[in-house]
Image (cartoon, rainbow, N blue to C red; front, side, top):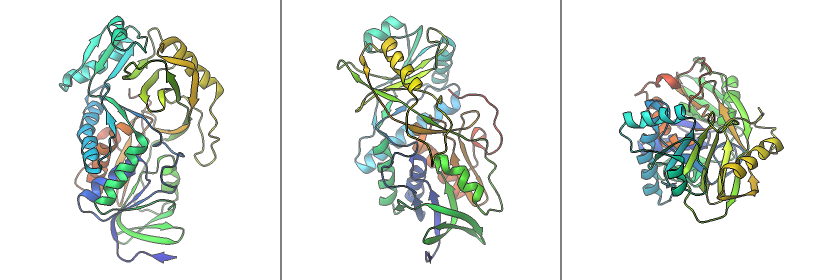
Length: 377
């Protein structure tokens, strides 16, 4: 086994959106960074793949709304840095239960973010592909991100800034040493001042095996296999990103959706079966697929409801759906992004960089420790 000569500043374990964003932000500061991803480039085994993710700023409360707004100029900076188009601002709509919709409108109002409340008739005239429910909130600074391109662009920007980006480099052990950490791979040991663990569904396994004096106290992390579906649109109508909140006319699960190059994507949020990321089947649950088809048939007149093409991905969820982004000793952890983290990617990367540099503390919602079962929406 070889040993890398000379320490790096930070080793980042996990090449999804969060680890890649952290590598970019740290390398851009002149830090010596090595980013390690256990699978091949562009793999589909985790939570950061595919052609589309929602970008939106409408959340309950100012904390997540402000964080999403902070991510927007960073996504644009990444596009400019890499010459890659990543984010299309199509606008986004929330509709359904009035209490849920108005809570998000209040957050946008408090932060001075442009938005409009519409009736279902007004919304359907503008977006005829969707049937709307009760109360509709539209905010224009929202839309969709291309997930695969975003991860590739983050890694390109990190590499261009001097980071070493390594795929098929699984980590076997993280152990503390005098003045830093050793990250053990199959054939190499890398010595670093600090390590960031952003390994998605594999985070707890790595940290449970780690040899550390100050051990991160993670909340419960639950990994599920989710199954969004893409439907063929039947017209060239515009499609905003959308969230349909249960509780008014929608009695089943809440639904999210957006346009993409693969069709109109919809999915339920966090309803899939709990899985082991190393042994999951990648086979969609027929009952869940049927619910999406029936939703499309009822609420999406702009798609062919019989054209569903299903994919699977992983959610790693905390009890309250808040993320874990915190530091103890020589380790920073970014985990538990609960199916809604992608949009925040570069803003989380910036926070991770601040934690690794020791110039910030974690905001209270992201700190280690137990969580109460209170959802973020």
